[in-house]
Length: 106
Image (tube, rainbow, N blue to C red; front, side, top):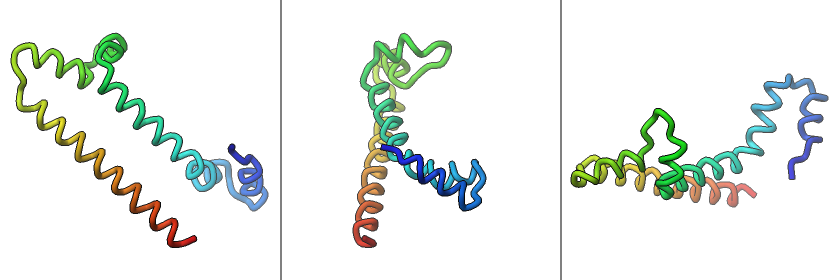
């Protein structure tokens, strides 16, 4: 859970609300926010039907790939796939490095 007493303590020590949010609240909620963003990204890549229905006037990547592959697979699909894979691998490695640094400190 989220301990509201930490925000209250920051306010008691003279921190303004924005400073409290930036230095106390945001670091505590950031893992959940990032996990939710990664899940939404992965699900949007995986589920073409949902992406197609909620896209509106924009063209999400899965819808673009579906339209592009009807005429043959363009090389951009492979480039985007490689970029997405590398970003995911870099994020996983970065998370591992940061968690190991945290373990060494404690």
